Every structure is written in structure tokens, then in C-alpha cells.
Image (tube, rainbow, N blue to C red; front, side):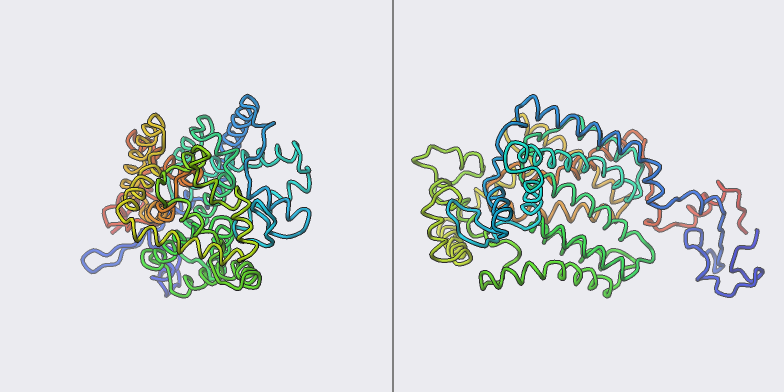
Length: 480
């Protein structure tokens, strides 16, 4: 056997520290090592793999943009209004008054009704393109591009998980060419932007999890990215906490220090917005103030689990139009008098009182909302979603055997992200950011069944002596 760097014959003394663990095993008390050059050269970095697959990513991106622009044109969405009531009002307030506020039917001053990132981006587009038809078109195009970038990033996600790029190419191509939610991708408020950012953060996170020697700086950068994502989508809080917990408990090379650094970095990103809210409202809450309002609008006598049913009910029996301050000037006037934080707290108490006195109705609404979150509506879309979820579940279970760290990450997203949405009425834009993971895992399940995807994610599964012997034999290395 040829001596390897760090062995005694090469003048080395730290054998255990210098030898890569992939080809190290013990049999009958003897330590065997093999480090063929072919193996170390055959595993390029994530950046190198992305460069190799850049052409596929660009094709997916171009196709996705073309399909969505065509949908916009033929459906007339390029000439329609925004339908972004609160977002548009806050963006206009930023543009004209430099105040992040006034989302309701009457001017009410500073607000935390919305998370800050997306309305600020819309205000930038308004500043560049105006608030007329061109400004509206710019927002629609921005959303369409964000949705398209999301599908291109699925290729990078596959590579980061240690899977074949075919998984990401298939998922990205299907998502690009067959938009299941084209209206959401253009008109769905921040849904496309959040989905794009979440996919990117998942790439960074799984790459961090699988690194054998991640530095404290890397941990801080991961926390910074999650902090920015939370400022765009506060509903990701439970996902973030689960990801940090799993990192510490499941990832072999994790440490409490790195976990704490990531959490602290995310907290520092959130700190300026938290301080701003405390000064403006004299209350502490997590990013947004309106959970009480949403809970009240979703849980009342005659409530529907669907947002569209609530908003399109007959006007004389429309609870949403009567009680939402963005639609009813009387409710907005109450905010002027009470203050936004006090108003939302009162609505929270109203909702909790109804839930306590109507536990069975609340449980029924919650169960129906959970069903709609995963299986959508109407029936024909439910059939598609049911098949997609079933295939994705098969993919997730298979992924636990092939790339367990990636599987734990997806499982945390599936379990934690929907929880808050089980308590408020369902809208398609709420579940949209999760669709990319369903599409990704369903594609993995299909390719895995056809034997067209990688079987092992490098660096994740413990190598047995038999595995080491097989790898060494394929590379012409003889072991004693």
C-alpha cells in the first residue's frame, strides 16, 4: 500500500488528524487508511457544482419568467390594479411621508401591521417607476421574477443536499412550466419573494449543516440570513427555532457556541425593528402587531375556514368588511383613538373569548384549515395537491436514508411553518412558500424510483468497512 501524507514513512506523526475519515476503519484492532487521489478530486465544492449546472439554472429561470409574463399578458394582469391594499398604502406612505405606516382606511400613523421588508421594496419600485400603471407593472414583474428565481435555486438546493442535480432540474422545470398558482405568484403580496428567500436560506443552512469545519463567522452569516428572512416573514420564527435546535442535536459537528452565535446574529438583525416598535407603540411584540386582528377575523360565529369565502360573503353579512380596519373606516377610527397595539390586543382578547366559549367550533375550523393548507381548494386542485403531498412524503422518508441532515431540515419546515396558519383562515398565498419543498421532494421520489439520482449524500452517512473496501477497490487501492 502506498504511504499517505502524514504516515510515519512520510515523516508524519498525527495520523488520526491528518487522514480524511472517509477511508478510515478498524478491523480486528488494526487501523486501515486509504486516500486515493481520485476520490478527493471527484468531489468539487458546492460553488464548483453550481458553475457546472449554471446553464440548466439559467434555462429554468428564462422559461419561468417567460411563462409568467405570458400569463400576465393574456390574463390582463399587466394592466390591472395591485390588490395589495395594506402593502400599497404603506409603500405610498413611505414614498410620500417617509413613514412606515397608514395601512388602514384612515391615516393612523406608524404601523407594525406588516413585516418591513416587502413594503419597503414596493416603495422603492414606486419611487423608480411611479405609483401609476408602470409602477403596478413593476411590482407584478418583480413578483414573477422572484417566483422564477425560486425554481432555478432548486438546482442549487439539490447540490447542497448532496443529491443529483437532476432532482433540482426536474423540480425547477416542472415549477417553471406548470405554474399551479400563477395568480399568487404575481398578485400574492410577498409570497413569491418569501419563497425565493426561503429557498436561498435553505441552501445556506444545509450547506452549513454538512460542513465538517464551519467557522463562527459562518454561523453568524447563517443567523444574519435567517434574521432577514424573519423580517420578511415572521411566520418563519418556529421554523428558525426548530432549525437551530436540530442543528445542535442532530448535526455531528455542531457546538453550543456556534448555535448561540447564529441565534444571536439573527437577534441583532431583528433588534432595530424591535426597538422602533417599542418606541412607536410602547409594547413589545415579534415584528408584526396584527395577530389578534387576524385571529378575531378568522374565529367568530359563522366563520369560514377560507379567506375567499370570508371576503366575498354578502355585504350585509360580511364580518371581514365590517371588522377589518383596512375596509371599515369606523374600525380605523378606533385605532386612531386607542393606538394600534392596544386595538390589536383588544381584538386578541375578543378572539380568545370566542374560542373559550366555542371550543368545538374552533376545533372544527382548525381541522378544516389544516386540510385546506395541505390539500387546497377546490376539488380538482385538491386532487393535484394530494398526489403532490403523497409523492413528497415518500421522497422525505427516502431522504432520511440517503441524506438525513437534509431530511431533518425539510421535516422541520413541514412541521413548524404551517402551525400559525391553522388558526387563521386559509389563503393560497399562505401555503405557497412551502410548495417548492413539496415539488422538490416529489421529484426526488420519482427519480429515486427510476434509479436516476445519487444514492448517498457525501459526508452524511457513516461509512462501514464494507463501503470503504468497495470505494478503495473501485479506485485501485489495495488494503492490507
